[in-house]
Image (cartoon, rainbow, N blue to C red):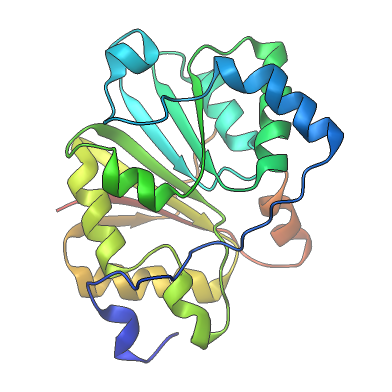
Length: 227
């Protein structure tokens, strides 16, 4: 568990990313993005406005770091009454998600190719999200990289501000070091109620979850609601 108090401050660190940039694109990725993204992309600027963005007023859920998108597609398919915004910097992952979503003809799956922190900070109004999902984030297992983990004091405050009453932040990780980090951050923040061990039945088990289980690691589930 990180012992340095520098991981328990309340301020974001300039220039510190929670992800590793990867910009390589194949012809297949380019073709998928050109074909599928226009129907699912959120507007390029302006604050979240469900009626103008999605054509309806419905609960909005944000998935931080959607990866290849299996969980995002599954959630959108299982919850047609919600609009899901999947945020991911890795373009090949976004392209794969959009291709996998196409057979389901999903009209409630939306995409932002970029940094979730920028979206949360600059474009998501307070009290406007029904939920935030953080599935198997990069654990940044070395102590010197702990500042890059998504769950920090300032992000916990930010997410709590953006959630509507009754909204929840849900986290899953297969890394004990990240689970310990979440517990430490939440305990220090003291602005959340936390329940561990509740796995959503709609979430697919392949991908990082299956990889972690094959490696003999446990899956840690957290449901956080603002206190």
